[in-house]
Image 1 (cartoon, rainbow, N blue to C red):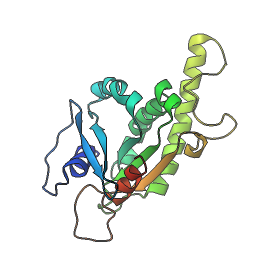
Image 2 (cartoon, rainbow, N blue to C red; image 1 turned 90 degrees about the vertical axis):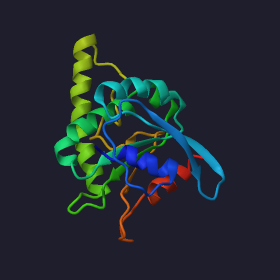
Image 3 (cartoon, rainbow, N blue to C red; image 1 turned 180 degrees about the vertical axis):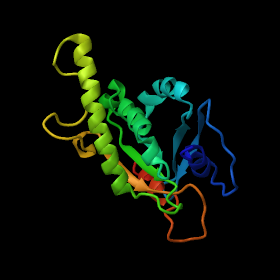
Image 4 (spheres, rainbow, N blue to C red; image 1 turned 60 degrees about the vertical axis):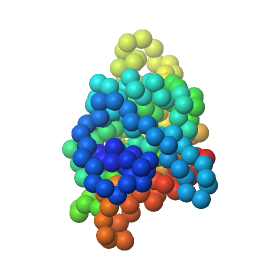
Length: 200
């Protein structure tokens, strides 16, 4: 439960009412109106259910002007492998690579105590993505018997994985919280909304 459906609900419906969510089994969609620009974006909340998210991603990835990948900052340490595996799948997808939409990694639940910040999360994900890159490349080489180029290798071959090497795709990390708090020092969704405004 990363909080992506709550984030979607707050962005699209501008509601501060508490929302009880469960793992999505079908996509949600709605229009997000960009403040001060009088333009809107169609936003899709993909299912969290592992079996469904790949097929729904296939349905919408060609239309994406940007991708928001929501991470639960409170459970990253235990979920890092799963988080990195799906992120790697998204980033190495041929359609996503060809279109190179900007990617926002939204480090959610920053309102909780003892959560890691976006900088730490980026470094941890880079380490895990580096490991994935090595294992996936080796698996592909074994399958086709060549050491040639393949679409699943992300970044530069001569160095450890870094998100900054995914050019022309731009990956940005922000801290956010979909939960309303009375604490004005909490990030809320301001950084996510600022990023969305760059897409119109």
